[in-house]
Image (tube, one colour):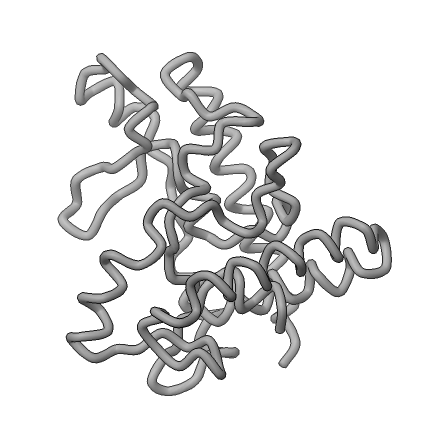
Length: 198
């Protein structure tokens, strides 16, 4: 399946939103190249994120085959270590949705570095194609309960009003629209390691 053409619009909106939030946050935002706090622990990605990563891998295999080979090697090593306890279908990479699977995922690979994290540079090798979770981590973003959440390293000592003044808007409606074009029914989620090797 192809990545929707409007995904580039979503990415541009997110990049502009992040840049604006970072400008407003100034030194409150601890995120810098080489800070890898958010690059540890498994997290679910949706079908749109997976397609974006797959698209990026196709481009990397042509533009920088050495990086693509390293990424694939790290993803294979990650799966060799964690696939036996994967709370879902390891053949497809789809996360399970049962209560038992969801409970198992809470403790799954929590301390493992993302396979996209380059251990030498401390940078993400697929940064341009990273999932939405990665694009929203750091600045304050709305949580389900309408509170704002941000990286624990950011906004240390800031007041609620200082945090609120730096809120990063997220175009959930556009993401949902694009996701509806590519996702199954019911929706499926996977992990970065599986997407890098698809």
